[in-house]
Image (cartoon, rainbow, N blue to C red; front, side):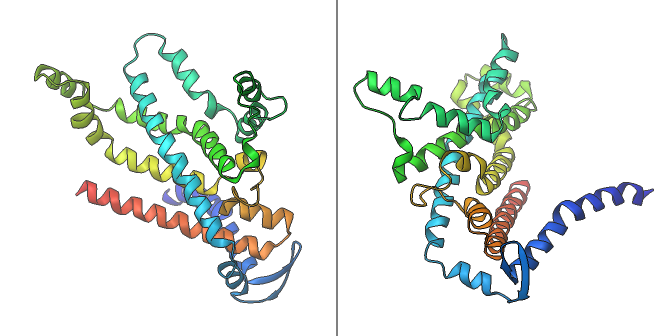
Length: 280
């Protein structure tokens, strides 16, 4: 009976996760020509990866993009969850509005923002031109392009944090809030002394989930900038895509993908360690 439950899950896990991981590692250890795997070359693809002069800038771009989106999406999700949790009228309508960005696919969200910020016919340019500032050509500058894709990503992903926070907020005993009110505590005291302690583990989980999402995100960047201009928005995940489909460097893309996998493992281990300390 135990194997009847374990076997299907194990088969899916091997097929979806272990198999592709082994194939990626195998590809990284071989010479490739387009999508054909050639002779065994050992760690040559990893040597090329870490000797690439562009790698530090791609890692820096990944960090700025991921942490920047996290700094925006985390408090936005928490604030939205608190508003929804204390809302008594029109709760479903407001929740639907808050969830609207996340209901779109990344490709749809990126396309909408690409149209909105288009310097020739986008609504943003029409607004800035009417105010006398000229068109909004945000994708032509490396700094503004990175800021733009970071804001788009945070806007698209904050509802995920909101849902997780909302579920955690609904587990807080109402008696604690009532006791604090009777002792003269205000909204700020309630937030610091009750809400944050109860949400501590949830905050850690949300940080890990969002960071893993941002580190691996491709679609919004692909739709809007494709990693440009001059590589300013090419994160490690976008580098994998460009190596795979633009340069046809299968072994190099596999090596970068293994590096991304290691980053995700590190994030998970840090989260597990932090949660264990909190439980103790």
